[in-house]
Length: 257
Length: 317
Image (cartoon, rainbow over all chains, first blue to last red; front, side, top):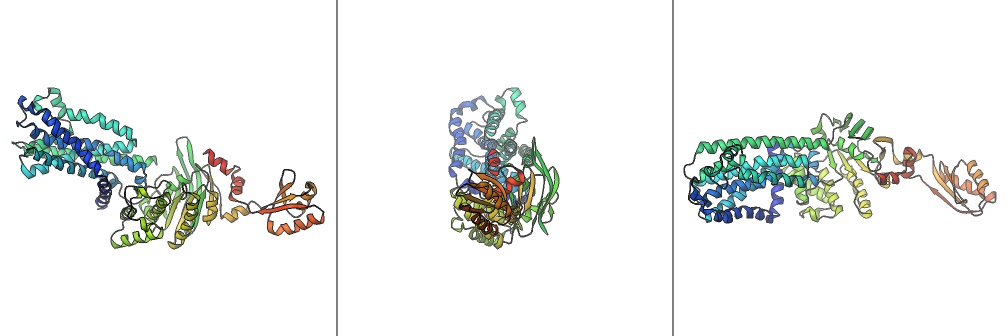
């Protein structure tokens, strides 16, 4: 299919550009490492409060850091679209028979693939710290897929914002405005039992939480595969909705030309 | 058959009537110039023709396809070299070309051959595997053109092809465009706000001003419609009036007198009229210090048809 072929070609372009600046990938991995190494150490006694499902805080935290990293990097993923818009690369594609959908999909896929690579690195460091994913290899796969889907859910949103505003400053403001609230309205850093009731309630509607739920379920004993399946399906649905919105934003951009 | 047919295009952006009934046609195989100052509506016209913008009203056809209803066919038939490059500066020249070819539906050995051929044709083969960020302005422009040509289009749109190039690179680009038009048997529509560029490159041109085509024809035709060449006669002793009479008798319409001693007049064929004029002045005993005949320029044409000075309008925009 044309969409898939064109998306693949465009992902290849972006991936190649990214590989030429490996420093960028490294810096993107440093932040989650800080969470894993510093935050994980700082709060290692918090598991005594109970409800964590493990006594090792870093084991509790590691799968969620993969999700968090996917989420954070997604909120920034529109930056590369803004760069392409500024360089008129998008405009050049629009004057060709290139698939319109592939122009936005490729950005989302690139973002999700980057999240998967970073997630893998995070899990490797966690492994070195003694974290064992309870569900084994399948668990690793679920965590990475959950990270990718959380990423693509928000990357679609970020692409839409990029296409509608076409301003880096707006992009940064939006990323900052949503990242911490959605992080704290999830069980990324704390057991659900220790959250205030209203936050527990609010977290149910947070796609970041759906990702954390799936990832943690496979990381700790007592995996609920139905929870995993439902969470991933919900994230897939959100990805579809935000990607469709980004595609509409591209059409809106076309009309401004 | 017409390669491009444009009928009564209108397009409004807010308060600005960017296109106010643009019509013209381009024959297959010709280089056609849209000439006008900045803001005249040239780029908007091109953007409508390459399907980037929808007109409010009017119709346009590229290679026989309606730009409003058959966009994909139009996009396959045309190559577009936008004013602002549009190359991926973080990729190499070759990578840019390969991707452009792929989204145009090419692939395999055919695409690789075509990429090599174009890199040679536009003269950047040596830089093919270098990152575009390191290219000079002229090299980027060559890559832009190669990108527009990758799928062997029948019609090529060049929007301000030499804007931002230094004079030397500009002249080089002119011969390049002429060579390409021939080598690829292309129909080319180019926009420019350089009068000499239109004069050099275009087989025919349309002058665009304030969203309308003011006049259309070959550069020579347009100049001929100014009714003649300018003849300047500098008198040695300032006998202006008798000299003017003599000029008038030889079919030269007096236009102005500069500094009380130089007569400027229009005559259909300056070269042919001049010997007679000089002989008559000589036999009347009027001494001549110098003479000059100049062919009309597109500057004169623009002034004539729009009533406005080209350079002043271009600066104002």
